[in-house]
Amino acid sequence: MSEDPAEPRGPNLADGIPLAQLEEGATVLGHVGDKPVLVVRSAGEIFAIGAACTHYGGPLAEGLIVGDSVRCPWHHACFSLRTGEALRAPALKPVSGWNVEARDGKLFVLGKRKSAERATSVPTQVLGTVVILGGGAAGIAAAEMLRREGHAGRIVMISADGAAPYDRPNLSKDYLAGKAQEKWLPLFSGGFYEKHGIELHLGTRADSIDASGKRVRLSDGSEEGFDALLLATGAEPVRLDIPGSDRPHVHYLRSLDDCRAIIANAEHAERAVIIGASFIGMEAAASLRMRGLQIHVVAPDKRPMERVLGPQLGDYLRRIHEEQGVAFHLEQTAVAIDDGAVTLRSGETIDADLVVIGIGVRPLTEIAERAGLALDRGVSVNEYLETSAPGIFAAGDIARWLDPHTGQRIRVEHWVVAERQGQTAAKNILGKHERFAAVPFFWTQHYDLSLSYVGHAERWDTIDIDGDLESGSCTLAYRQDGKTLAIVTIGRDRQGLEAEVAMETAGSGIR
Image (cartoon, rainbow, N blue to C red; front, side):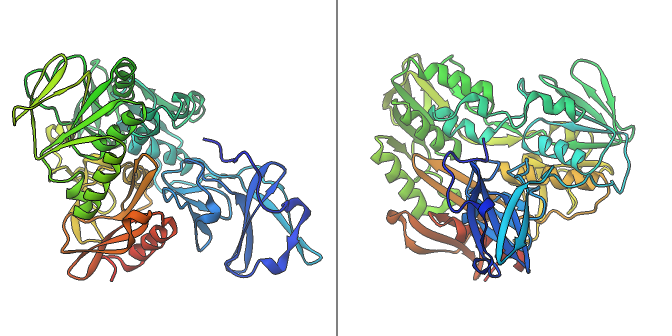
């Protein structure tokens, strides 16, 4: 995605703007030529950086200034105002930094600095080889951060996927809907890996880990020694074991190949059944409906996504989908699939040319278990994301850690959390001793509706709603014993950012 919107907005900053406009905390969106630039005054200093987030192009001018950084309102990426560096995922690439000069009562933006990236750090701990098992969010974020933090040794990334790391959330959203091109999916170009000396082994699995001998045995029989190891093996879909669940028109959605297969099937299908009202299931329902298919959703739940979002949002999402023509069969399960239909427990049959199963995922922890690492419904890690074996770290869908905001040990299956854990693990591999304390964040998209979720609430005793769901502008606060554990915002991006900062400041929940 480009950081440059098509139409420049605001003043031409090369011609200067009055310094009087730039009081403390002020921001000005303008442009230099056709490049959008954001000018910010914070703590008495004036900064100028590229105005669009490098993740999905979010408008940084509508974001939140926190010290000498700015946070994107869409998906909460964070950039340094001083350098443009992408400080926190989901953005992995910097925005441009610009030179400024004050004279004659005006501020001028003169041109781009040579590099928006900071000077390479010097690692606290010098290592030879770091092996990363997994080519998803945590793995690629860790590899990139290792180089950014100055690791000069080998980086070996072992990925079971056949494609280089890509934007997995897009698979159930715009790419599946036909609104995003496949060329937008790779997180980095092919040249990135060669340039940064990242040895990427695709279509390869690790069979075993010798924790004491510091070696990994791969599925092809070869071995890799390591000085530090990151487990970022992710999760796999839970399989539905009913007659016909292995038919060619039955699909799961986890990988790019999965998504390609669904799209190919959808091109000659008219009717699709989605089994499961999970995030993947409901996003797939929306995306396939946007392709013009008739959609039926089958799930044992009373409401879609109720376990995570609660009854109010569950009912609201159901209405949103029903308005688009989606039919629901809730408190039902599928018992058989044949060539043209899905049979429910009630005996009802639903015509189906395409079936997508989204009933959850399970963390891939088998290799960690065989290596003797401590497990707790995932791989147990400390506050530095290190496992029970020194020098072996875990991040992403498999990692269970003590969340300082809730005081609970949690495991979260969300893209941004995995990326941020990968970044923190990379720093700690190099001896930085940085606690992982990021507030969990995710977003979900259904047609034109986008929900942002900050925090983590596995249970709550009240849900307080500010605003009106139907208006498209509201906030839901999930509270337990008076403590706000999570916030969902619709149409209130800045409020979501403010809640994130409040949770970071408060530690264990906010009042």
